[in-house]
Length: 258
Image 1 (cartoon, rainbow, N blue to C red):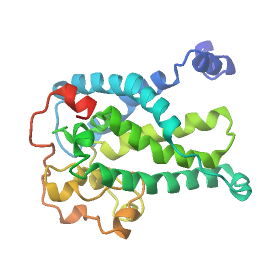
Image 2 (image 1 turned 60 degrees about the vertical axis):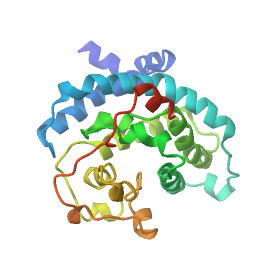
Image 3 (image 1 turned 90 degrees about the vertical axis):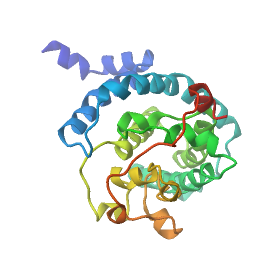
Image 4 (image 1 turned 180 degrees about the vertical axis):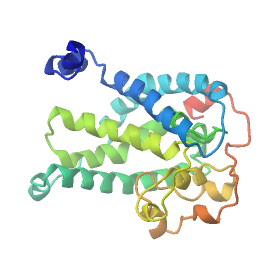
């Protein structure tokens, strides 16, 4: 089992980092693992064949072109917060919690901004899927990606001069959380939804009903919706929920956000 030892070795880790393969390997692992979970316990029956090719192209476009370009631009316009020494001295786990608390608060309000009529076209592609599953969550126009990056870049200041692995953990956690909130799974937990966004919670937001599209804006924490009056209880929504934007828009316009 020499190949297993090599996969667990420092040499392999360095090889992955040196060749920029981390995101590729993580994506392949998620493609297999998350899809398997959806197949085991789906909330709705769906045909992957009819949607996955389109979303794989979209995910490739977003992941390898739009996201790097958006990060480049966002990093140059985002404000960096001055961080008190007391924050810098926090344990790593507490720093991660603070990062998500600050970033998610900003992301909640940025998400609400996206649903204003003047800005909606930027966010429209994300709401275009008529089939909700993990990969559909990666439809994001370039301007949407830039704007959504801003609160997280601001929040990332809490890490200060972070070691190399912090960024990989942050990147992985964002990808997995995005997978999670869009997953087609039947699992649910009422008590967990008091604090965190779950798939069925977020799927209400993706409903083709205009009322629901202006609710459940939370990205990580559901408490913001409860605090600011945008909460809709999934238990009270008539099933089945249908998704989409109710119109056909050329893909080029959706990607460009125009």
